[in-house]
Image: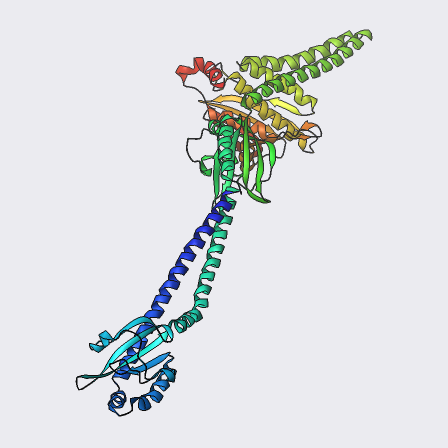
Length: 539
């Protein structure tokens, strides 16, 4: 049986025993009180009759029975007693409810009454067991007779039985109230223990603790307290490691903002990318249901930081390969044109066409290799120019682009930041119905700051949209067989690197279609090994 049912049965048994004991005690106490009340009643009545002048006068008269029998019978019937007996000191009855017993000896103890004391006792006389009182009748200091008033036990029991239903009704009401209370407590406990028995609860706890410690994914369970506030019910060791959470209870305020917004009422969703200060996490969430009622949300966290780094390198390699393919295709067309011109005998035109194309390409190559001391960045920009042209976008690297030998970012970080900004800009420019989409890139050092500006002819992004894009990634759910990539992850990766290097990512107020990255350059004494430090930190 479940814990709740065991507790319910235990409560009902204990309450039944307690109520039965209290009821029995109440019945005994009530019976004792009834006997005491009867004793007081017959004692007062016996004293009243004994002290009456008519009783004294009748006992001194010649025929006490004739004078007393009608009067005491009237008193007996009026008071509901079973007998009122007036007798002589020698026990001779002058009155009795049964006239045949008049003149016979009174049965019972009278010694204390003969000594002048009024007393009450329980005695079995001619009418059966009764509670009786005996009082002396005195006149001028002399004992002239005795008065005994009694109520049989049978009548006392009848009177007690008349009040017993009320007492039993109270006990029954107490049983009903106790049962209802125990049932409500049991229901509440059943909700809290999910209707499980103690062994199952113990097994679940042991398995729960073992699974939480051994599972390779981070796990967070959201719920609500009695006041409806969001709380974090469960955080396993892996989630603490991924989110840098301390030991002990965790509050929602200690979680990253994007996870706090999930809460216990979020819809189920899998493979949503969230970017923290130093990690890329794939987040899944699912509702926790019990008996059709939602009681919380389970959030799983998978660390994709290293995988995303590898994917980024793969994307860069794929981009270079596509650029080379585009260039090979373009060069094939140009070579075909040159060969045709030679075959047609237009040698001068072929030489002029070749010289012009080489001069244009070589000028950009010479300018970037001279101004940008980082080969990876120069190669990236050259490849992006060709890639953008393939998509019909004019990409321009401004004349003031220049980068010294020591920079604030490692080569891999530099390629990640510039590459993602340019990719996003190309996508944004292509998304608009613009006949001449364009992108403009500037990488320069302004004083002690590395500044990267990427502008495009797209719709731009306001500061609020930028904040959302830099904290949330994209869904990896496939759409038509391909990942549904959005601009969010690239900007989130950029923001992660910028934050790690103490810089900032912002939009240009005067031009919404421009994103600006500003990162402090290393101190002059350390510029010689800045690149090495960056690479070590990245690893």
